[in-house]
Length: 339
Ligand code: NAD
Ligand code: TYD
Image (tube, rainbow, N blue to C red; front, side, top):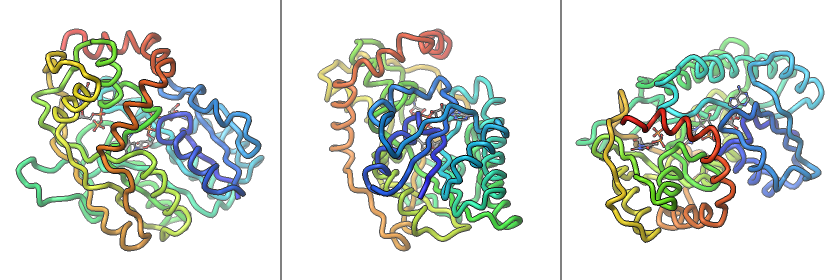
């Protein structure tokens, strides 16, 4: 069995590669990644020399490169993580989101059709459902919730999902889609809330909370997401969408306070900054379908997951310090300088 993992030098893709190499001793994993600012080869260092792993640097929009890799490797399954993923960057410059997230998905599916893959899995997000009101804790996203996007990022992910379902219906491509809530864990790029706050705390820098910090996200430890995808590609029904989330809703401000406490830093580091445009209020997943059909449940409680994550960032300072000292500095100045 050969699995092509796109975007495997990023946060969730790399964790998925580690999981699959360990969980399936007979599988070969080929990772295709463009190595954008978010992709980091040092993340994959521990598997680079693995006999069942191969890394290929390429763009999922590059038809020639994608088709020649399919010709060479004849993957059985494709799991597409490759994407532009940061909402704030999509507000700043939407174009690359449309190109990678939509056109890249099309290229991979065209190659999948040409080479007769057994499964195409699209890693999507709960953000395609838009947001829920803060004063209705009884409401959750189910797979039947209409797509209703807020940011160029979520609009590009929703567009790709629609295209994936169209390739299933029109061309018979055996597809599945997972829509997961916010992930956290090792190797997450420090532009996202949790690693950004950990890195800033450790450097005694201000902690920029958007608006009043009352927005709610439903956090899932990355390993639980990887196990869900593993189950879906093996046992999920084709043509189906599966929501993935662990009923772990938290307000941003409570997460930031928790990180301060865990690291012994004062809450006076917290700085309230101008809110994100179109900022989604609340995400909350109903994971009943994946539980009922595939028996999936999250295994890591948030209290344990966040401690493990903080410990990882403490033990792997060089990994993130190399990032925050590079071009990230310009990004940070642009995004937070006058906020
Ligand atoms: P990430 O930004 O950490 O990594 C993205 C990876 O994709 C990087 O390695 C990058 O180099 C690669 N990439 C980008 N453009 C590419 C291109 N054109 N060709 C090839 N490779 C390219 O992202 P992540 O947080 O690991 O997210 C992975 C997937 O999971 C995305 O599709 C995202 O929408 C989805 N998702 C993420 C979350 C989350 O909380 N992080 C939640 C739900 C769904
Ligand atoms: P983020 O990690 O960017 O994920 P997403 O927007 O995809 O949910 O942000 C999570 C939440 O944290 C979101 O409500 C925005 C907020 N946030 C801040 O308050 N400050 C920050 O510096 C960042 C990056 C995010």
